[in-house]
Image (cartoon, rainbow, N blue to C red; front, side, top):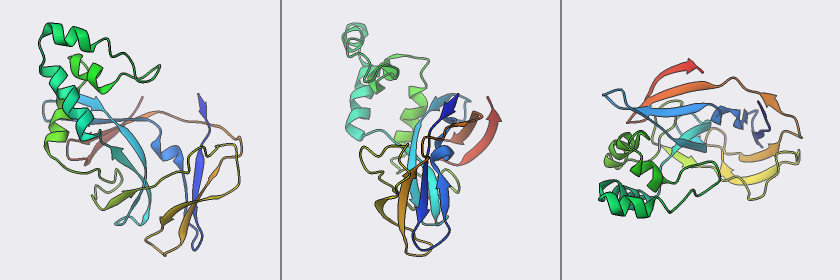
Amino acid sequence: MSVPYRIVTCTNCNLQEASLILNGYFVWRDSNGREASFDRELAICRDCCTVTPIERLPDRDEFDEAEEASLAGFWRKRALKRKVYRSFWKKSLIQEAIDPTSGFEVLRQVMGLRRGPVCLACGSPDVSSMSIPYGHDTASEEPVPTGTIHPGCGGELLVRGSGGERVAVMLYKNVYDIHGQFVERTRE
């Protein structure tokens, strides 16, 4: 499978990072060996001083609604199943809560810690999400400002597309504990 990608650069230094760091499977694993996959996004880590992936934790209200669904009785669960998929291929958080094999229990443990997202490279909580301008096309090679300052040098981070270039990626499974600390990486 080949994917397009974006490249993040800095106006003051030679920082260059591709969005390919987001590829692969990312899962939390609890002390019982249960796993739950999670979304991630590009961010800037002030400890690493670079662009890095961070966890994308669900909105608290969305999580509370899903947790209510997981605790609901049979008829309530059946009614909630009608809240079909948010997107064509991805289950909603409510559907994951209802499905006992989804890993929702692991997500419940993560959300119970009431922590923010952490850098998936170093584990630091000193991160800030990096917004990619809406509608930015991966085929465009024109750099676009992100409005994010690079903590390493004070330059502004720019994002540009790969110019239509696509790369084949090897998929890895990246495992983290419920605190966001790296455990292991395996090839899928």
